Amino acid sequence: MRQYPKPLNRLINEFSKLPGIGGKTAQRLAFHVLSLSTPEVESLANAIRDAKQNLRYCSVCGNLTDQDPCSICSDPQRDPKVICVVESPRDVKAIERTHEFNGLYHVLHGLISPMDGIGADQLCVKELLARLDGTVKEVIMATSPTVEGEATAMYLAKLIKPLGIKTTRL
Figure 1 (cartoon, rainbow, N blue to C red):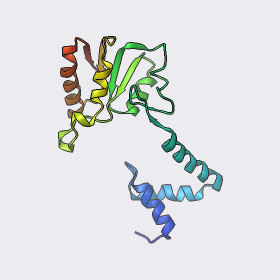
Figure 2: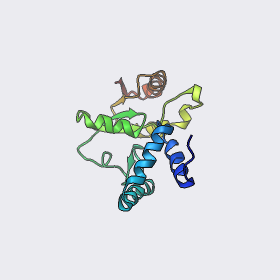
Figure 3: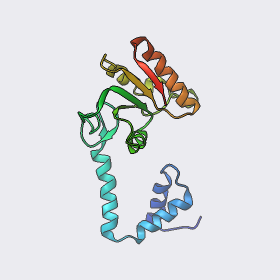
Figure 4: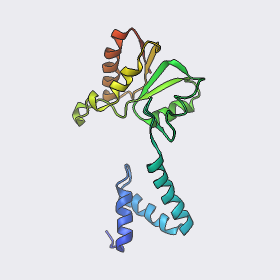
């Protein structure tokens, strides 16, 4: 690799730590940032800082939010009898884009994956079970169609079945 000045090497290194960003892409991003005006660079840096400081997980569903509870959980138009269980906040956004689902969500923040050392105790399973207080009539499992997604959905369905709540698999 060509030797760049230390600040540029550091910037390339930081970009390469992002998921899906290899060395060449990190270099392109670094050179792009250097081509921006100072106000544009400051705006980018402020947006990153603002997101890190002001975003948190909703205390009800676990989705990313800047208010607690999130806008979905606090929307009186939502059907509180239906909860859609997803892997990550990204999945909430994907389902919301369809404009077809009007219930609430629960974000697990991962999937059960014994190969990666991730068990149910590392996900937000207890929080989901705590929400199933008798008003919920259906839980929709919208985990990915991978081995881990299927295993997680089956595990949750087994836990929920004795509660008499209908479980559906997307």
